[in-house]
Image (tube, rainbow, N blue to C red; front, side):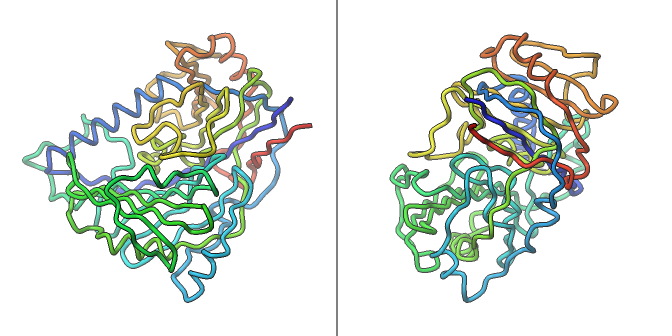
Length: 378
C-alpha cells in the first residue's frame, strides 16, 4: 500500500511581547519554552510513504478562507446540519463573539481540528520567551490577565464525553453540553465546555485563566453558540516527500505551527508546518484529548516532521544531514529553513536521513504555491 502525503505551513505574525510581574506566570513561560525545546529534540514516532508531487497552485487556506463569522439567527440550524469533511480538511473558520475570538484552525488530524482562542485585554503566551531578554521584576510593566485557551472540534464518534468528571449539564445553541469548572496551579479558573454540535459529534473549549471570571462559564457558552461550519478546505504544505518507512500512516497536519497542543502553545511563534506519522495509526474513537495529550507528549509509535525558520531552532546550520539523540536536521533555502525529523529513537539515523534527503521545500512565504495533503491508496 502506498500513501501519498503533503503538508502545509503558514507563518503568523506575532504581537509584541508583554512582560509579567507575576513570578508564577514568568516561570510558566520559561517552562513552556523549555518544554518546547525538549519536545523538538525528543521527537515522536510514526511513518508513512509519501510520493514526490509538484506543488499545486491553490488559494491560501487562511488568506482565501471565509471572513470571520458573526453570530446570526441561523447558527443553531448550521450546527444541526454540520457534517465534517474528510480527514485533513478544515471545516470551520475563525470568528468572534464579544471580547473572545476563535482563530482559524491550524491543526487537523484524522479525528479533530484545533484552533487557538484569544480574548481582548488578556495575554496569551503562545510565543517562545528567551529568559535572557525578560525584564527583571522591579522593571516589569503591569501584567494583563493571562489566558491559555483552544477549541477542538472532533469528528463524529471521535470524542468520549463520559471522560469528563464533575460535570454540569448545559445547553449550547439548543444542543446538549457538559461544563466543568475548577482551578489549580497558576490558574484561577480552569474551564472545559463540551457540546454536541451534531449527532455523536462533539466540540470542546478548554480555557485556563489567571482571572476567576475572565472568561466566565457564560462567556464560553456564548462563544460555543457562535460556532458554525464552513465548506471543507484541505490542509496544504510547502514541501513534498519522496520516502517514508513502510507501515506508517499520516495522523496529523499542522499549518503555521508544530503538531499537537505544543503547536497551540506556540501558535504565533512563526513555525511553518508539522506532520505526525504513526505505526499503528493513532485511534480515531474514544479520545479524551488531542494526540499527545495536554502535555504535548510524543504519541506512542509516532514520529514527527517539523518545518520552521532557522531562528526557531536551537541547532546551528550545517551541511547535509546532522543527527543527535533521536532526531535529525537538514537546512534549506540558504540555511534559513530548518526541517527536523524527530523519532525519539524509534527510527534509525539512516532512516531519518533518508526521509530528509527525500524532502523538497518550496516557497514557505507563498501558501498559494503549497500542495494539498493528498492521501491515496492505489
